[in-house]
Image (cartoon, rainbow, N blue to C red; front, side, top):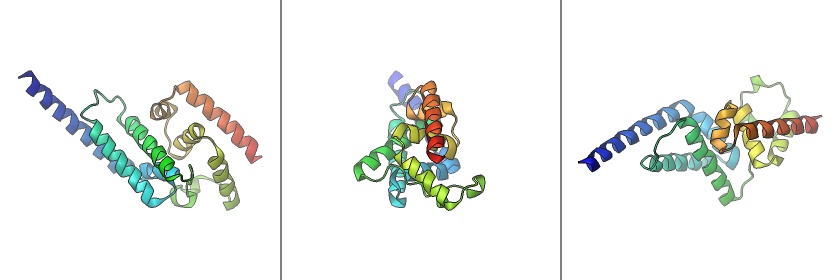
Length: 172
């Protein structure tokens, strides 16, 4: 009898997480696509990353005890899947097409400055680049970034600060 109850509660939990994933997809799909695309620099590969991430999330619901921050939990899966896809395909680590994915009205750069910024981001190592993208292009808080990248929040702050100092130096 206890075994049946366990399965029912597990089924209820799975349905709840499936509902949360569905809401996240409906509300944040464009942002998820941008993150995937920023790693693989290809539309079809970005869609594959999204699909693989959704499948990994769905498969892990039965084994997950409790998820404190569902969005951060899913974005961790998304970023890791994108990195894995990049490693397999050996594509450039950052290829954000600024014109397609960022509202240019928020920034006051000309085309040459965008290209320079893109080049700097391409040369930035992975954790620092990930932090900059998640913070300034996707609007995550430092705490959320720490959860997504599985880093200490103070480490995220330090890496972000050092990256910004380096960016400022390279842009001047």
